[in-house]
Length: 256
Image (cartoon, rainbow, N blue to C red; front, side):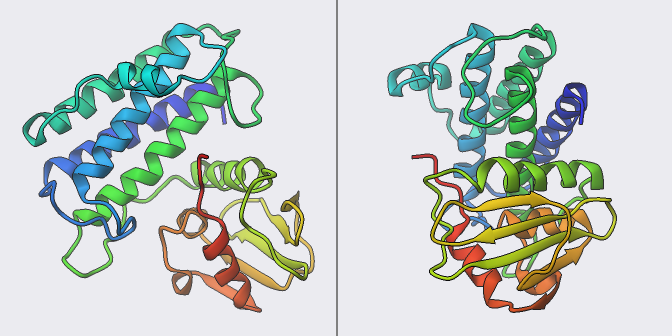
C-alpha cells in the first residue's frame, strides 16, 4: 500500500473509533481487551497518536522517554472531554503525516521502506485494531459485536505487518519445543504466509506450503484472528488446531 492509502485508512479508522466511543458509555467493558474499560482504550489510543505525532513532527532520532511521552500526551481529560480530546489528537497525527517530507528522518521500531512509510502504516493498523475494540464495547452486552468490515487489501497489509515485522522479533514469546507450522491464506487476496514456530525466533516465508495447521477465509477475519480480536472458531481452520492455541498464547504484542 502507498503512504497516502495508509493515511486515508488512519483517518477513516480514527473517525470510526471516535464514533463508537461517542455512542457508548465510557465505563463499558471492552470484550476484546478484558482488562480495559472503553475510557482506557480511548485514552491509550489518543496517547499513542500524540506520541507518534511527536516523533514525526520533531524528526526525533531517539524514542521519547517517559517525561517526553508525558509531555506529548498533555493533561489527561475527564470523561466529558475524552472523545473530543481523542479526535483532536487523531486529526493532528493525520495532519503531521500528510505534511511530513518524503525523506523524513526519525526513529522507527519495525522494518519499513522509510520512516514516513513506517509511521503511516503502523498508526493505521494501531488505530484499526483499536477501532474494532471500541466497536466491541459498543456491541450487545455479553455478545460479540460484528465490527465494521475492513477493506481486504488493508487487512492483507495488516496481516503482512504482523507476520513479517512483529512476529519474527528476537524477543517475541511465540516459541515451541518442537517445530510447528501455520499457513495463513486469505481467500479474497492473492497472498499466503508460512509461519514456522520453534525454540528460535519465528520464521515467516511468503507463499503457501505444507503446514501443521492452515487458516483461511476473508482477509478481514484472518486479520482480526491473528491480532486475537476474533475467536479462532470463527475462521476456517484445518489440521492440528493446537497450533492456534500456541499462537493465541504466545503472539500478543509486548512493547518492553
